[in-house]
Amino acid sequence: MKALLLSEYRTLNVVEMPIPAISSDEVLVRVGACGICGSDVHGFDGSTGRRIPPLVMGHEAAGVIEAVGGEVRDFAVGERVTFDSTVSCGECDYCRAGCVNLCDNRQVLGVSCGDYRRHGAFAEFVAVPERILYRLPDGLSLEHAALIEAVSVAVHGVKRFVPRPHDDVAIIGTGMIGLLVVQVLRHYGCRRLIAVDVDDDRLALAKRFGATDALNAKQVDATEAILELTDGRGVAAAWEAVGATPTVQTAVNCVAKGGHVTLVGNVSPNVELPLQAVVTRELTLHGTCASSGEYPECIELMASGAVNVRPLLSAAISLEEAPDWFQRLYSHEPGLMKVVVTP
Image (cartoon, helix red, strand yellow):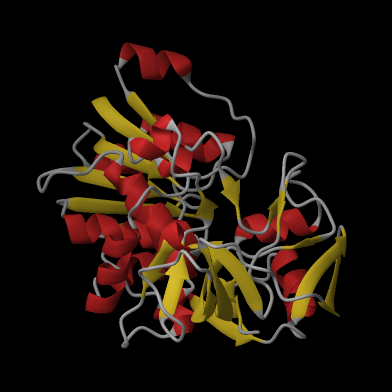
């Protein structure tokens, strides 16, 4: 099969590799589409430490079942499916409690971190366990279904604190995940939804997706503007979707006393937290990682149109085109949201 191999940092080549063998509880999926995640772009240069070459990256994917193992009972050849990016063991205490994202034996497709190497879906075929598979409705294209993993991150993040209909809330950072958070927040319901970013085009999308207010942090003091919009109280909850010190501090400082801050972004391993503001105002901080069983809800949200990924899809490209597009994404070319590889 053809595969996009990270042979060394900043070097991607389309190569021939053996079709993955499947165990008795696995299926072989012919990949129809696989999204390029920001973590793949950062893995491309080695900055994450979780994409050690040689590796086939890619974990946001959908396709058609090509073969099934002997113990597979609920899926058949020819079915259109997506799958969780997290390969959980299904047996540890966290898995039994339904927290598969916290699995003690967790692996992620397309990741090599020293503890394990698991080739991903930037290839014609990928092998995955039946327990992480989900069927797709006929009306959902494979290119759009490849974004279900990203939608699941947003849904899981919002479920860490579900807003009430009378709540004012804020989303700090309206990149790919932030814009999905906007749509999920609007679906669940809130009174005022304030979006903060430094890019006017992304803020325009946030408004299109349901944000009531859009603030460009290059033009205004975001914290002061949010306080002004909320009569000095601050928002009941904020979601931070960047993962950098300035945006984390904005999220903390714009929340009302007793409020909630959910940290979704993780671009920086360490940030400076305004601890005194958290302690004296009794704020609750929620960490959120990947997703944990939200895929069926995400599929329904997308199939019903409650979450619209079409405006976020910048391009669908071939494996052969992928190396050049990685360079473009690595250079932070303006306007690019999600690029999907179609092997």
